[in-house]
Image (tube, rainbow, N blue to C red):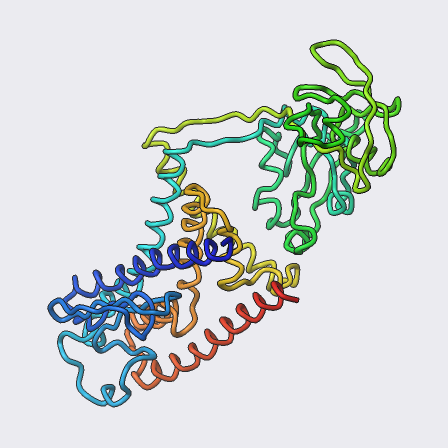
Length: 437
């Protein structure tokens, strides 16, 4: 069932975005009097089609994509024999370069607007939830990656890139993970220590086995839900209890408590517990995996912010263009050899996995907003067969006053298609390899 939900969310998200992208091209083309022969969401075989005026509207059976066919446009679908004929007034190639440029930018512009609208709507409806840095008053717990970077459990992060840390989430910001010469400042034994962020940190975080936060706020805890019939229930633990010591050693921090349970797997332990302000002693048997059978209740307090519609729009734009900024920084790291492309480039399987096996409106629209901006960015790349390739040639035509020949554009499209198919093949192969091997 999880797989079905993943696939359904992927198809729905891409259908919305591709449909809007192609709609941007179509509306711009019609505005300038170009004939639009077909507008399609999905690829043939067709499920349904209907012709209104000069345009056929089609829904295809293969959902991962779509297209709009504009008369006289030199692309992978054009009949090469048509290139030998004189351009007709309603054809794409007969229009001024600036009009053709707007048509080619139409899909990208619509995707950018869609991304901004989605992020602004989410900000307005849900507000913002964050963890004040003051809540990490006991410092951080560093996992293996965190320790390799230079963190120690108990370090208190006070600044990121020289700026005072006010919200703990800034520890994981893209400015740090994808930036250059980024660093943290921590308090350790009363002294300020700078920790440089390695260039390949994002690469390590992309590993399946290590896809987790490298540092997390160190926290005290209380007993939450207790599993019926568990060793915790047999020991007499109750929701709301605070565990103070295990076998006489301080265990108020959850990371310390977990380590003690693992050390005493399969053994009997003695705990000092605070209940209703009074200390009591309890004995419990730890199972062979180092568990007692209860869920801890963290004692971190998150803050929330609400925004007006006027505040949400610029914040939505900031988040949307933050995605583009992260893409640019990510590409920079790949070209510098700081990020392994096999860990960073994914296809439909990876995207579906990010959507997840449970449907949640906030997560669905957050992911769809992100994909909208990624789609805009990728389409703007100067690769023939993508919108960006057309934009590149049209910009050259406007600046130089010379139009590339139709034969040149046709051959460029073929080269672009080869590049595009290679990239798609790599992404899909990487998806399959990462998922099943």
